[in-house]
Image (cartoon, rainbow, N blue to C red):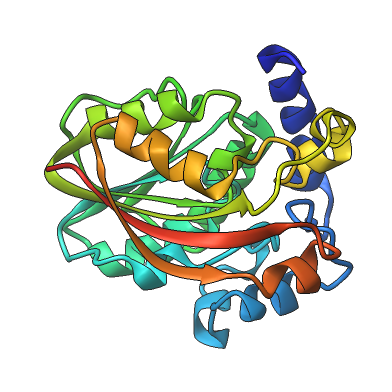
Length: 248
């Protein structure tokens, strides 16, 4: 499927999720509710309570938990959705820090802004933009986080090159994402439901890591969750991969 078509499929799907009163759990094949999904991938009750309406059950890990975010830092959330991980990062950076969320679905950005105001997050801002072409200045970010989003981007190498561009030297990126353990059929690759569910556009694990390295970044594998396949993805050949990525 062509890149523009993939983006249209993703935008339409996540716009629908953002505008539903109860949110949704599109980035999995599970029928569980958002809270149950979030607990299964590492979020605590305390974290979920930070802004429960922002938790749409779309993640495949908890990048803020594995990150080494410090007070006063500037954090960028790629594919921020309704702002759940951005709000958690905001707690870590404190009043002297800043969190920027970027998403290509305007309905998600609108929802995130409403929730930021509702919960009085003054150190968080949200911008419309594609993660392959970030509306962010060079060398301006201390930490990048991303939760189950890069698999949705048609050009993943460009995403990592953009992360390299915006990160300060020594800056780090913490990613939880879906990667494949076995390649999909052409039919599966072009299935719109699988594309929107974080599977159809996913890369094989080794290919994903190679893209990170090609962008000039150093990568450390922090954890691999194969159980997520049975719990949320109906046994498809995939895992959730958590990475620490560093700009040397």
